[in-house]
Length: 230
Image 1: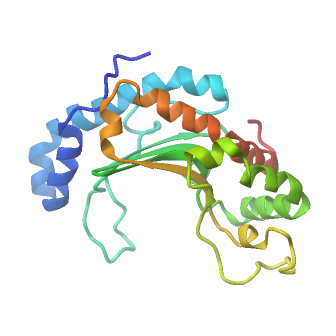
Image 2: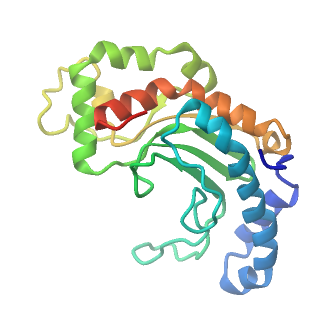
């Protein structure tokens, strides 16, 4: 365990100020503060989460490095975006499956935004072959998918299985499948939403781990569909 005692008050204050000054000059002047308050705090959080995550599954990585680890970088990719703000106005951590190479892999996720902290698990916009495997698994095992959707612990702690999707049935599916609305999804996740005050407690990692455990039915279904161990 790390010495994580909750996020400091300046953590969200930094992002509020960044939102009002999202430019390179301000960030450069405040980079030491960013390294200390944001990177340092999230590193401590990730270290604290590592043994908790290992109790849920040994196949997910908790790496406290700020570059190449579980922490998302603050720099936005603006090459193909009309929004040219250079920095993300939130912090984020993904405990990614060891078989995954990027954010599109199955993973547990924590989002730190002023006033809005979100955590849970799933898979975000998997590549077409992996998405087809998940859709096919839902179609072939409707009872198993029903057990995921109706899991009490999952639904008590999160908003249930969610994710953006398409309007029409995807190619290869008739539209008559029992869970066609879920088959239309391009992303699958179950998330818990809280106020940012929850992060100031040393018990925050325990609450995150409790929520991760609650969403394991979804994670297990996704991993089985993708033929990777949970």
